Length: 123
Figure 1: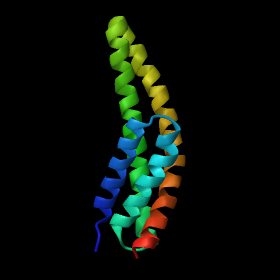
Figure 2 (figure 1 turned 135 degrees about the horizontal axis):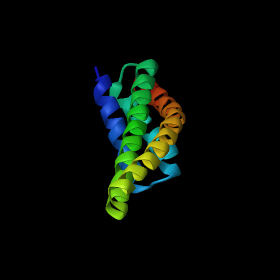
Figure 3 (figure 1 turned 60 degrees about the vertical axis):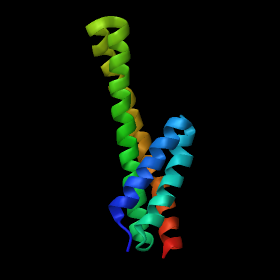
């Protein structure tokens, strides 16, 4: 029997790799659906288990993107504007991170659908 957490981890990695290779809408649509689909196939326990693996992969992908946005903008602000620039860059990253979390909810729904389909095909 497949592992739920292994499926979640593989789906998360696929989502993250596709998100970095093709930034923008591909991360939200293609990466999460493909990541969720692969998570559902690897979880191999039926449709609900695949959907859960896909959902977790989508949520983890969104959280990592939000964390990277905060850290990235804080570093860029710190390099270009010193300590005060790092502070404002971190605040801007926090705002973008909140938007990324909100979009991750929609991405997790798409990933859940992909996981549901993957779990159905694996069963």
